[in-house]
Image (cartoon, rainbow, N blue to C red; front, side):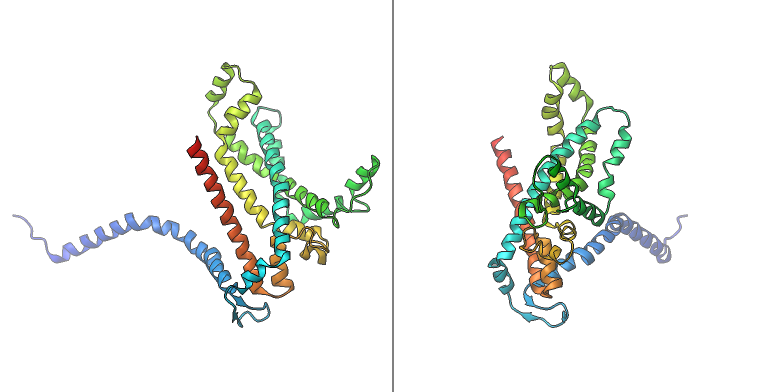
Length: 316
């Protein structure tokens, strides 16, 4: 004789089925929720709040007192010669540091990709500059490029070349700062390229070798196309890093001139201009405007990169 199913036995079954559905459908959202919470607290909210501050006249000492000025800060920034000078310096230092850095990293990764003695040692050693703090690296290079007692000027003097005032002159200062950036990030990018190279199937190199391709031809026709996405990734990272360059020129200035990027702003970057406006001139509204200008510059670079990629895909 069949047993009648009561409502008391159906309720636990319904709750169990509901909990099971919630576990299946809701668990992924629970796992990714910490990232979005941290992103909202430390990235999204500061971004929105910075945009709000940029529309006000507000000083560092009185952040709770804001005067609405709409887009006046952006108009003033557009007409400020210091902004265009900082933008130009940021671009030139970025190019001087990024292009040699990535080329050297590509060559270093190519050498490390071949079987060689103590390869593990060289791979670990390439990360030492990246692990070194920017303050320590900048201080050491500041002494190396010192005008009167620096190692570089000593080497130049030994071959009859007059000493260079690396900190006072525009282009020497930018070359010196770029040297610090190159030293710190070349090994890091080389390991990224190395990881991508090791993911390329070995049969591609075997096929190229059977076709009579030299090592250089294998590098240009097999290796570089195989790691193209990684190269684009490092270019994006280097562009972001160059736009936010701050620590190296600040410490290279050795004092008050570090904030202004030299006595004549000869190596002041957008990061230094942001710091000068906010923490030296106490104008947080203008500082926030510079921050948003840096953000919009990165967006513009990204849009241009996407357009170039689309045009290349259409032509090919």
